Length: 632
Image (cartoon, rainbow, N blue to C red; front, side, top):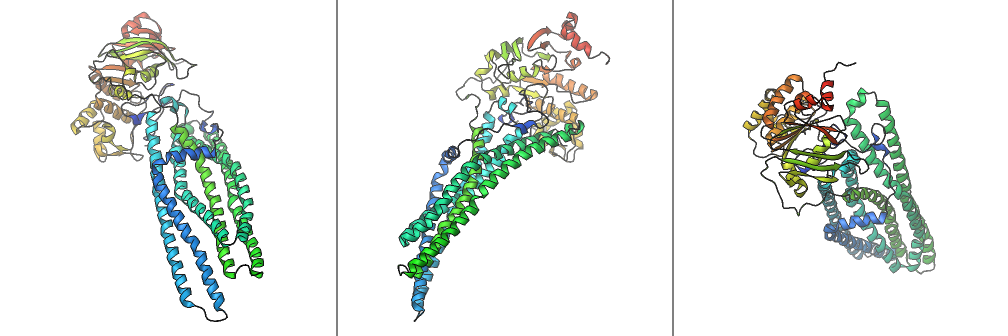
């Protein structure tokens, strides 16, 4: 059953119709009114914006990580302590070397050598404990920050307006939640810990080199200055490619998500070649970005290795000259070569860390870009609430457009009485589903007002408005879970008897009994449900919700004629005593409506009962009679 999924499916018309009740449904079932990038899988044409500053992205990361900063500071202290202790080691090695050198011509003081070696082992043991503690803390911190990022993005999604999802590919959003946050977590876990150790080791070894011998210290550091200059140049050039890499990765995820979701359409229209070319184009951009970013950043580590080796050569030459003149002992040379290794080792690690941090800066930019998007207006201050609803609904001069320069609903006014069954009909694009979107407050009107029981819905919270409605869409939405969980979604206290009664009413109970585990059968890719059976399940879900207001958007479009009659009878029961809004193209299904609103170009051009509108012989009569005209 490939179309049972956790992501939404498109709906009829140029509007995004969300599913009621829970905030998790925000953005569900959205077909974008905004023009998509050309061709199948048009996500790939996503404009790559100019990357932001590396420091700015990491500045946001540091501010975001403020709750974990005490743990990070402890990790830094452990790293510094471990590094300082490790830096004492070469001094002890110098003592052992000098003791052996002095004893070559006579007797070696084995007791002193043993004592020094024991002390050295203890020091290295303490250093290991400190480094282990630091890595453990950073691993914990990185996972906490990643978890908080995912939680914040999920909460942010629930606060985002539908217009954002109208113009943003789902795959790109998923890429931010998965790829970008994984990149951040990996860097925090590995690169930051390595960076802390490397910086502490770099500074500590530099200090110890100056303490040991100033001339040799200047020789080693002088050869490293060139490396820092070149590393800075490489970083400035490669950062833009890391930003493009993350954005193209989001683009290719969006393309793949769209093509696989509509795989049947791609096959039916023989669009494999076109989608393959589009994928190849996006993949080529991604490859180029990754190659340039990796190639430039990859230069840093071998460059630092070369600079380190150059420092070794310079130290050996200068050290030999100083030892010849008797200014230093051989033990000092051995000690200093270890310090040079400790000094140059962090350079390559720093280069590697900075490479990861550049990629993370690009990922963080995308995550913070999403977290900083405009949200729905805060409604925490609203105290007005509707719990008991009669069902009167009134539209007063409503005007709305998904884009400011393209108005869809021009001047919509209607007065619906409690308990009426209202059908909204009209040609495709007339604004039928848009009216429902506004009624559910998925979008806010540009002007005018909508009332429920004389209470403006903009004075109620969205959650309260959603509580007043149950909805059945043209396109079914089932998640991976049991039949029982799908039917009682977001509804507590539903008994088995309630489920059976409702399912019998819509004619799906017998089929559910034939499933392997009945109502406990898991609906996943292995389950086999027809489009009509899925529609029956969603209708049963709406009946279980039992809200005072009902919206039916082409609810029987996916079922056969016999099943439609069964469902229609159930719908008559469902709509009894409720104010119902029915969107239908098959006008024969809404003949018994109390009121029919005929929409054309965003305005009501006629209203009345079925018989009244037919007798007028206007646009509705043309629509109705056209269904029975023989095709040319």
